Image (cartoon, rainbow, N blue to C red; front, side, top):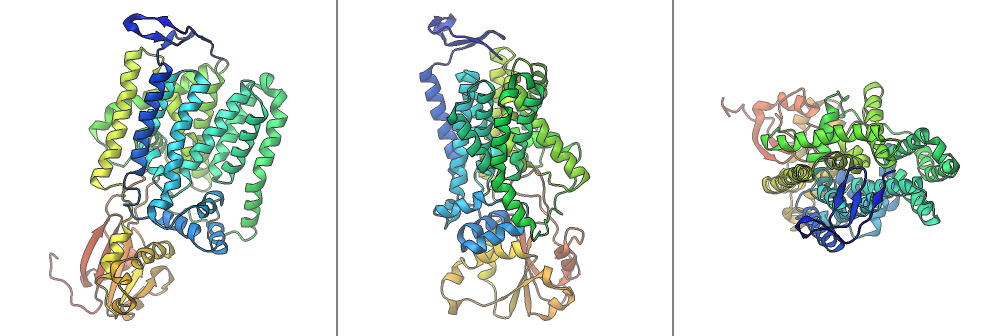
Length: 530
């Protein structure tokens, strides 16, 4: 383990005061309590602003609409919705029922506040584990502006909760590994593990990383292994019970949209978790990308080389390697579940190993390096706010557009259940609809997935409003997906159907994440060039 020599009050050049010295690398810690508190407060303010700014401005995207249903519907209906997914656990969704959740902002607020809590907990954990206030501030700053964490903290999904629980579990486990096995530490560890396993299945990655510490340090940790194993068994009871109830009537798990990963997906995942990934390569990303890549590579190497002297970094290494390797192999060989947001459990490990790697260089060099990453991340977040690319699915404007133009003889065509739920949520909230029933045209809703013969659609109404959600999916991107051709028959069943009626399309309106087309089956083909 790393030893520290504390020399409080030692004067150094430039009138700085040395608070601690890392005797292995000779690094002096010159961040005092006042500086730390001021820096931590500034970091928290920045983190708060990035997570709360215009929180309700974007429409709920399809996964968030499911969250809204589970938070707002009657309890039995909510439970049925969660169980029907097959691959989701209930804690996060049911907990939202305890808080106000009637608007987009309120529905996302718990995730945003948990995201901010994650920033504070990371700084506190680093301060306690490494006794280095400056390292704690850098870790907090990197997380506060991290695009991956910011986007998922602004989403009504359980990922910011997963980060908080994962960090609590990792911190308490490392405390126990260092000999602090008080009742309080055991209690927090067991409670956090229980809630984490019942929040998201990917939390099992923590179990694997802990197991590797016992495997490689059996002589040191064998005495408390039985108690750890008992705590894990108790923590698994709720999630195993839930899994048993779900599997009694197993639902079909739709992972068809998740492609089998390739080796290139691993660096893209790490790119996303350090700098944010939107699928577009920009030269402004190059310095930050090089720094992050070198930091992760060296960090993993140092953690492996120092495994006998520093179990903290060895644990972080396994928390990265374990989930990545397991999910990659599972997705390649059996069923693909490789999606970046499922790796939230290892985000703290990625950031801490990157910091540890660069901190071995001269203070001027590593501070500049980490500063470049922070500036790059902040630019990515703010630029997405400016250009609106954080709006993934603009159901609100699309629904209002259709509601304001629909006629009583029209029909509205949607592809499947999740798009139906999202569209009708905002269709019923549009101004024409709220103006009064007598002033709103009543259009039939048609699900393409329930029509065996799509040719029969032309007989259902005089005109068809086709709401076509972007079929492009990406396991890395969290915001706006790339544009698509609605008449491309290769993209989806909707595109295949539309390709046959392209001449009868009267108008196309584009919104973030979708296109709205007005189709008149009886109309003459449009002139060439339209």
